[in-house]
Structure formats: structure tokens, C-alpha cells
Image (cartoon, rainbow, N blue to C red; front, side, top):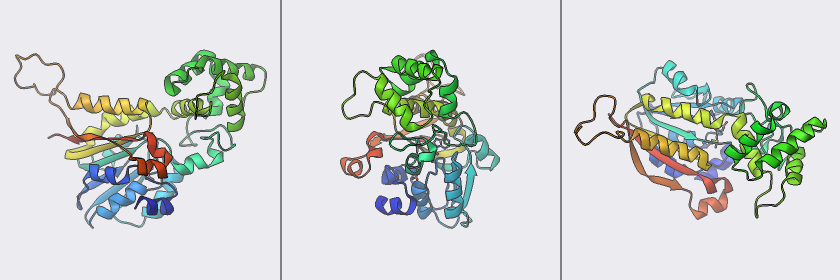
Length: 316
Ligand SMILES: C[S@@+](CC[C@H](N)C(=O)[O-])C[C@H]1O[C@@H](n2cnc3c(N)ncnc32)[C@H](O)[C@@H]1O
């Protein structure tokens, strides 16, 4: 099934069956795919919906939105939104579905078409401009960030968002190149600079992997986006509605895990309080255990190796 989806959509959806199972799609329900990509998961949801069901898909990438309009635009059950995760709760409230959503999926990170397009600048495997914006129409590109950030700021980004041991060395090398009028302009130039700056290679990993991850997360404010989305997500759900999030690195997954844990607990009430007061009740229930891709999926799709799916259900 996933194989067929990959051919149809140029992106092989990760944890496809597990995500659909997590959403427990009901034919008359209202579902949201917050990160359409190339529609692998969205098409699976749509296939399980009946004529009364509703599917809203969104993405911050205009190319993904165009794709969604082409694939789903003629289906009266579907609505396509150009929205980032942070703005989605407001956009969905405006669309009149706040409190009415039966399933909300966010499959984080980047899609294969984004990675594979040199002009998007996400990958050092392909030479292209240092852009890295998921929505090239807004915000600062990676080139813009490198052109203005201090050693301290760059070092912090590489350490915090890339968990890069040589963060300061790389940051100093970037700023030195800038001062010499030799700031990297392309993905290959940046990858070569990092290679030269790093004293030792991690086995099995290109020395620029962590730098590219960190810059991408910073440029797209991925952790801030996720935080805003999660804060708004519960109010969108109908009681019994499901929130399913697929994260691709530990910084994201940790946030999802903590958010669900916090929303599923009543906090530290003293034992003398038998019933949690209004406002202190848990709002979510954890559904099942976190799911990771099995060896078979990972062997066919390397992107799946770090994916973790967490699911929660809105309590009444
Ligand atoms: C892993 S892909 C999703 C793939 C999709 N589930 C499929 O099966 O085709 C991630 C998508 O999420 C989008 N995305 C990532 N962060 C986002 C954000 N903060 N707001 C909106 N879209 C985001 C990316 O543009 C990309 O298209």
C-alpha cells in the first residue's frame, strides 16, 4: 500500500498504517491533515471517509498546497488551506470546525520533494542556494541567517538544534568566512566549510548533517511552530477525537511526549483533594504506546528510521 502511495505522490508516507489506525477514521467524521506533503496520509484518510465525511488538509509549503489543490480540489469533502502549524488552530476555528475535529494528524519534518529539489536548499547532497524555508514566501532564508548571525547565535543554534559537538568551531568558521567575503552561498559550499572545520567525522554520518538539521529547524522555527500547534490542538478536537503526531528527531518528540503527558495528568494535587477542581482535569488520554517503524519499513525508506508516532484522545 505504502509502495503505491509513494509512486502516486513522490513521497512515501511514514508509518502509514499505524497513523491511520491511530486516527480510527469514522466515515462521517471531520479529519485534518496538518502537514499534507504529497498527500500520502491524506489520501488514506479520504479513502476511509464516506460521502458525509470531511477532510481539511494544510501545509506551509506552497508547492504542497498546489499539489493538494490538484489532487483533492474537486472533491466536495475536501478543503485545502495554506497555513503553517502555528496558525492552523486559528484557521480551523475560522473554518468553523473548532471542537468538531475527530482526528488531527501532523507528520512533521520535510517531504522527499523538498529534500530532492536542489533549489530549496535543504540537502547538502544536491547543490543549490541556501534557502531551507518550507514557505519560501516568508521569513529569513538560511543564507540570510548566516549573513547576519553572531558566532554566539550560530553556535547556540548548532548546539541546541543540531546537538553538534563542534558547534563553536563551525560557527567561528562561518563568521570568519563571512568576514573574509567568502560566506558560503550554496549547500555544497557550506558542506565543504563544515567538513574543513570539524576535526573528526562521526562514523556513518556526513559532518554537515547536524549543521543542516539545525539551520533548517531554526529557519522554520520548527519547535516554536510545534508548541503553538499543540497548545491549540486540544480545543479543535471533539471529545473522543484523536491527535496523532509523527516526529523525526528527539527535540520534537520530547515536546510531543511532554505535552501529552502534561495534558493527560491533573498536576500535583494534594491527596486531600479527592476530585480535581474545574480547570485541573486531564484533557487528553494517551492512546497506546509510541510507534516506530519496523525493520522492513526502514529498509525500504530510510526517513522512517527516526520516526515516532504518538497518539492521544481528547477527554470529555
Ligand atoms: C513529512 S512531510 C508530510 C508528508 C505527508 N504526510 C505525506 O504522506 O505525503 C512534512 C510536510 O509538513 C510540512 N510542514 C512541516 N512543518 C510545518 C509547519 N510548521 N507548518 C505547516 N507545514 C509544515 C512540510 O512543508 C512538508 O510538506
